[in-house]
Length: 390
View (cartoon, one colour):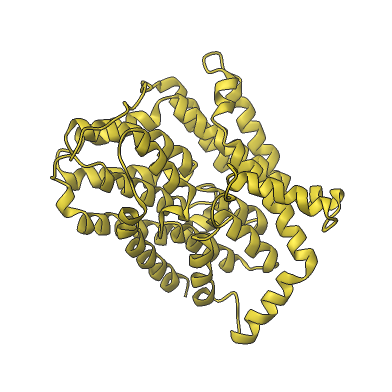
């Protein structure tokens, strides 16, 4: 899982999780019934429904339009950077950050390339801001959806608690990228961009309005005493009833690989818990520290694990390792695990999506270039979060 693949095989993290889940059942670590019971179906339903809502905005051309407007209005590098950070961070609070960066990356590359600007600092800001902004709400990213479901966290309370450090983190992203990359803002491209950005979707105001109504319905589902999974599924079902957008196209935008990753990890962590290893690891940690759930203890653990195996597997593991966490602890884990994803290129799926989409457009966002900004962004953001929760 840490390597992202098995050497010699073309298998990624999702494939590893699925194979591992099959292996623990085949070896008898857990029974088939226990494996199925370990999969949190309601969390998967909520995540699926949010992906459909995000797909609605993508099909309406909202992401493409935002990227085009940022490039058109950003006459100076500072204004352009501020636009990227604010739009990416804002959209990611209510929509899946992975979908936001997937759609905006090629449009930014094309627009910045036409202006003769180096897209790299703006793409790094796009990834970091989408991560930071997504920490503000329980629907901003997959790990927050999981944490919100595990602790039955209230929507408004989550925003009130996690919103301020997320907002400060967005400011940190802007300041650090501006300082680290100031020489590159006006430097011309060393070589022309390669692949074109592809067909851009024009803004459809009617479909955008439907997406906004769906977002209002999503918030209502979390605020009212309803079954969250069924309520979210109803929102997704209504969006699929469209005369202009084919349901096949909408469902093709769902990240089925991420849903499978979740399912596999639920089974694997349940098997790990059944061995007693988790309990012994917790006992060992408790021997050295009085409170393993204290924020100063959780922060370095989340920083390390999130950049080894990813923040989603890390959160699933911690929720199994530390059952019965309080609301304050869950809020802290949500923010810290998300901020930790900004440290390295492999820290979050959004970072990798930006790098892969940029490479398709002829822009190389490398490990070292990302770390130049990512390391100070992650460490500064997490320091702010530690002080906030303390």
